[in-house]
Image (cartoon, rainbow over all chains, first blue to last red):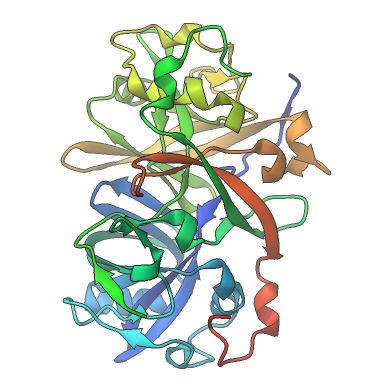
Length: 193
Length: 193
């Protein structure tokens, strides 16, 4: 297989697109963030450019939310990434609800919401990396199967930065294997079918 | 919409499944890691339990690789997560190649490979969070469209931990919108179709 060296290029995609909520000046604001991550079983990360208005609210309140929009919310999700809270009152775009932290505004329309306390900040030149401890998770009952979140019903919006057609949103496809199981039948010598 | 409070539950899925490569005792070892993240445009993160053999190799060499397996590699990918390098010589599973860092073994069979230098380590109780600076990215020519990586051709393996059927691998679905564009037509009052 011939490999092409593309130089230093971010290839860790696709990533789930999220709407991050925080109180700014006492009012909910929402930013579209797809540069996210998982640290360990209780902590997630957000790579947020320092120009975002939301960053100040996260630092002030030590609380924020991470909301997963579904495919049918792609227009408003993209809109939240195109327009700054400095120019538009984004609290009007959604129905906001609060959980036990009281200071992490969450989006009713998003089928999955994680309420987070700020655990750490890792400083990068142009970005604040906010590491949140997940304190509670709320899911639409119609996105559950047997009481647990079903990504086939949640229909997340997956994001890739690179690609022929530029930054793109993708749908989730089908579930095709059970993790920590399908590899039990593996025999060396068939790395790739 | 009725919401159910599930307690503190990791919901930031699906995530791309990766094979992380490092030299351990001078020999390539590979670990399956899907708790990954993006920090900024040049840095990615790996949340790796301290029990992994690969961690010592990353710390020693300050270099590692992040390889994206394709759907047809799901068996060997899962196998690498089930069996420790302490018990099996995983260098025999793949054809290994090296780039400019010389100390980051990469997997020929994976269609996308990122060669990383270790930029920072963030310490969690049971996990090392390795933050890598992407130094070079190599992509199979047949996974490119117009010279850039095409995720529709790369066919990454997406992972979710939660779900009715337990930890699962999912396929990527179709590209359905252009990011930083589709929201331009958004009019308030239609958050969800």
